[in-house]
Length: 209
Image (cartoon, rainbow, N blue to C red; front, side, top):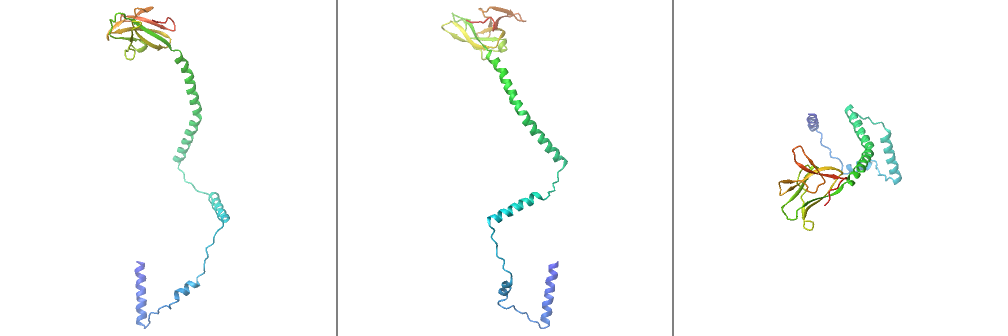
């Protein structure tokens, strides 16, 4: 809106000058050169490395010395304290966690070293059985992983295993479904169902072939 008013005023002045017999006056040819020549010359100054370093130091000092206003909400303050507390707790607890792992390793190592080698043997010189498996309280009466292998030299089904010290009940499962107490066991016990199970004492009476 202001621009339209300016253009209108200029047109009115031009119209007034023409009506009064004024002619447009053209500037001389060297008008621009004279104007530019009268302007002060500003020569760019080149700063030495020392001056640039000094100016950088002054700028840094002004940045850190001037007070800065920081707006922080209570929620941000609480979050900051929580983060600091978590970091301190983690750094403080790390050595104890490492020490705890070391203690656990020391405590569990002797248990692993107490395993005793045990040999289960089921004599079968006539090869009456097509398969034999050891099931007992040490494997929750599950046959998987405790299959026996027939030894031609000893004429028996053999299984070598390791167990921690203790008393274990067991039987042989022959031909896939027929339970058979160990005929060479030193002790036997009867379970709540009336079944006769062999008793293996690891660390006491060893059951060897």
